[in-house]
Image (cartoon, rainbow, N blue to C red; front, side):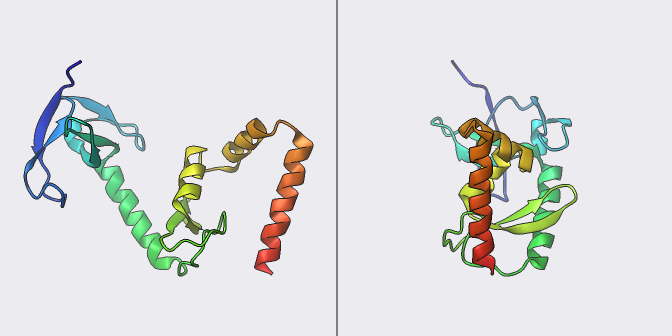
Length: 161
């Protein structure tokens, strides 16, 4: 199967250094932004830093406007956030490079997480019902879930006192 592609210049990417890059899809294709849900031309989306075996770059699923707003939000939160503690505030592993975790609506800082915890929670919906739904799937015994939750809560409470 032959995949359609087109070329465009991206001067902001350090790995392309002003050269044209090959982008997956036709130049006139329209895509839906996963944040604002607007259908926009592919020129409204940044390319990812990843490419396929043919050397063709993929587009991000978030439009440039939403990407820029998210970047500004993270920057403002980072300025207000406390210093990184040196460990993930979820799993408590010692990690040097932590990610800023924040609630999206309304926007506020939640804590510093390792990549695994931040990505995992994000993929589960970034909310308690999503995480609990996964817990119910893993352990279909309500009493065992409550018992484990109690144990985890007590361990976390013991660390903070």
